[in-house]
Image (cartoon, rainbow, N blue to C red; front, top):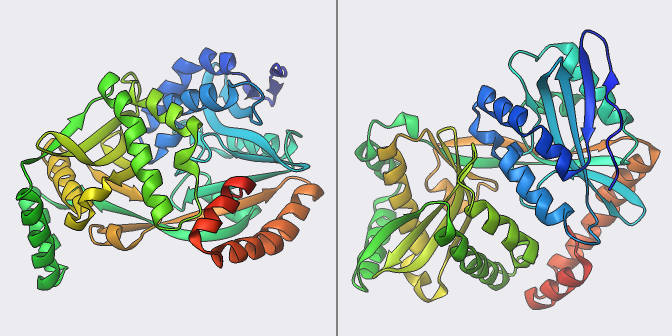
Length: 394
């Protein structure tokens, strides 16, 4: 692996250092964790040391990996002032930087210390990002409009797409009954009756309970089943996405499920029927926010809408435990909007670093790729999945 270049000095005690190995990540673990604590922001869950370290071990640490680390850090004396976790891969001749954690990272951001948000630190980071020479462009997806880096990208990068993230702001309710009253007020009586009817039919099958599986071996053993159920649903729905079928995905989430020593603890909820899990919600708890990452249910019980029952039970538990948010992230699809009382804009950006990067954006992303995706969408879903798996199109 490549070794880090010497830190580049920028005056006033500021230096920039690019982390390129897992060993170098481990050397700054304490400072990284301290920066997370200083920010205490649940939406930075995918920039935490735990998430990034586990991803690097699975994706960068394997033989013949196409990925390389490019974690840009800015220091003020010995204090970590800014951290931008990136990883670089290739698409043909093009070198592309993405958020470290791709394709599973759902919110992208940089971490900037509250004590170092002045222009010198940000400018130094921006100059390093543009001058690193390790990639032709950066594809930075899932950038929340309220994130630290959003304003910079809006000025300097190309906005490729925009969607919304759905969440439940739990601070709006004194207790779960308050949530129930609000929920009933915004839905038609027929919809409420239909959900209740399906729940009663499910309860007729046996005893339903919410089980919270804490990080450890039990959670780790459950991950393959969660992802298999998710992959089945994706395939049945005709969606072009093989993410949850990848062994790297299983390895990453299994490792995270077994790690309780982090600021972004993995949490697995299961809806059980007579003790047997029939629906799952896999997420992360970070500074009072529960971020729901993977939801799945057993197809044998789909007629009873177990996902709806599970969400209802999770919200009751989170409100009881004093959480501030239940974040369902993007996209803000129909079933999420059934629950959400808050929507946030989330953007995808493409940042050209050189002329080669500009060519990729203007020729491939804006012209060729949309045509390919339109052709794929026109195929029968079975054929589409086969083509997708062969091409690895993202």
